[in-house]
Amino acid sequence: MDLKKASQALSKVDISIDESTFNLKVLWFRVMKKEGDWAIERHSHASFEFHYVMSGDSVVATDDGDFRVKENQMYITAPGVYHAQTSGSASNYIEYSLNCSIIVKPSDQSEELQIMNALSAVKCQPIDGIERIKSCFDSALSEAVHRPLGYHMMIKSLVKQIILETVRKVASTQDLQIDIPVKSSTDTMAEIDRYISTHRHECVRLSSLQKYLHLSTRHINRIVWRERDMSVKDYLTKSKVDQAKELLSITSDPVTQISDLLGFSSVYYFSQYFKTHTKLSPSDYRKMSENDKKRLK
Image (tube, rainbow, N blue to C red; front, top):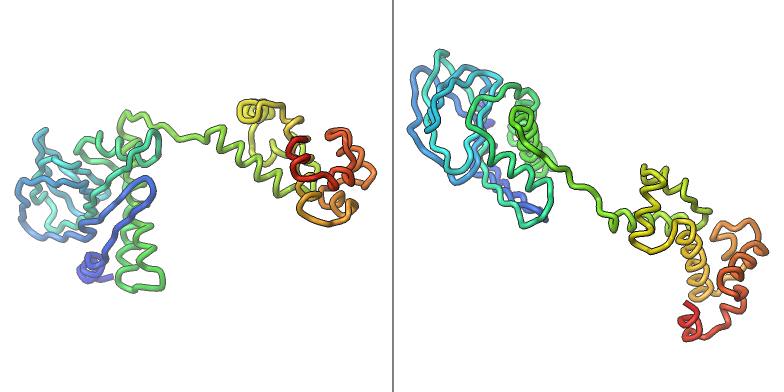
């Protein structure tokens, strides 16, 4: 691949990523090739700049000191970090460069916020091991050159992957505390309700929920108690009765058909089950007025 032409093609792609928790704007995404003696004067950016060395070496000078960066290493300059760069001992130098502004939207807890904190805390110094990042960058260059269907979406995806791979490298070299967002009990309860709704033709049990959610029975019980103020057994019973009430109210299907739809082994068992929990037979419940049904709830 002609790196110069590929870099020009990639530089022309407008890349903005606007998601619910963050905005990312790529300012440049390119290959820098240098030969002989060269120098880049001291400067800073209002954005993050990611430098990945493909071949050769160079010397980077910051206010905290100088360091040499070489093939298969990277370094990051955070916003406001002044840096200069000069040629090293190798006659040829190739660096992949990504510069982007990242704005995380207000949130108490999100992976994006953790990533921003990790990037903001990183020291400007060499970090080893960029093979996976190089592969992503090469893929982005190829997408920009060949422009297959969906290339723009693919390049956006690769930008996110490059940044994630970079942050993982940063986290492995820094003493960073990365908190992983976890589902709230409300979210898990919503999953329980969805499962019950989509499996109404079955006899849903606690063991069924355990297999689906990959949670302990004790944890599921705690969530249902917290969100519904009743045990799992009572909530499953109430859900099944509510499903029966709904079908009896909004359809004219025979009780036998409703019994089958809700997974009961016989219409007799369904009628006994319904009467046990409502004090009414399915037929008597169906005959009630809507106001009486509301009072029954």
